Image (cartoon, rainbow, N blue to C red):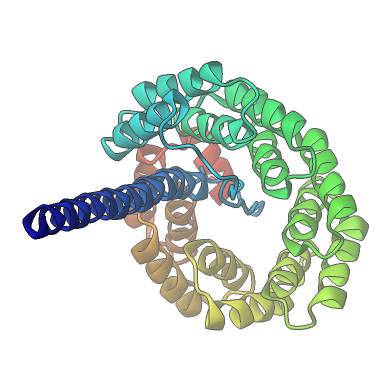
Amino acid sequence: MHSLMVLIVTLSLLITFFIMTRIVYTIIMLVATMGAWGQAIQSINKENMKFEKTDKPLQIKVKPAVDSSIPIDTTTVYYALVDSAQHYIGLNQWNVAERFLIDAIKSEPNNPSNSLLLSNIATIQRRQGRMQEAINNYTMAIHLTPNAVTLLLNRAAVYTLVDSLALAQADYERIMEIDPADVESRYNHGMIALNLGDTKTAQKDFDNILSINPNSGMAKQGEGYLNKHSGNYEKAAQCFSEVIKVKPSATLLANRADCYLAIKRLNDASIDIANALELDPDDPFIYVLRAKLNKMRFNREDMTRDIKLAVAHGLNESEVKQLIGE
């Protein structure tokens, strides 16, 4: 009888140990798979941060895709498809990743995370230059989440690329209604206004940014573009300098160099052009600036070389010559 009791207790302990082991294993696997979901979204979101350049001086900012805190059942086909999309994104196989994201949406058309997946599909399409498709998918995502500021920002940025500036402005104005403190939408709105020659609206937008944040670098940057547009190159260079001290970029260095060329500070312009090319050797506009500098220094041979480099990096030769006054 005693042996039987010992056996029963031993078996009970073994069963309990087995059950507890499986529970711990299940929890570990669930945490791991949820981590994989997070990596999938993070990886796709990183791509949303990369965006094609706009012509100078228009410089539109974009944000990553909308984040999602909605719990995901990692055992579903939906999650498996998103996980597969993540795998092919890691391999830069964008078309395959896009198909998996589309299939995920088809598998659960009412899943609240579909807004995020549509945004990520739009990002893939944007990378491939499929701008109208990207706009369509951002629009569908916005229909699902109409107050998602980052979706509106990203659609507006694509509208800017395809020169649909009125539609971009409408998106930025919608963002300002949703979140009056969003400075990026005001900056972008002001930059488009400036690009259209509407200096009053641009000034109002940049002043509003300062009222929200008196130390805003965006406001100072906008002021630099505004002064440059108005021909106040000395003041513009000073504004750009303040921003460059904190956050240098090829675009800002190039714009300050352009101002220096206008006021004949050729050595300063030369330094900025060299630094800008170090940061972004693929920007054709910087070669245009260097060609302009070499023309002012009567360096015809070097000017011709830079014209060819600007063309090699994507500009039309007649456009380059027009920009440098040839």
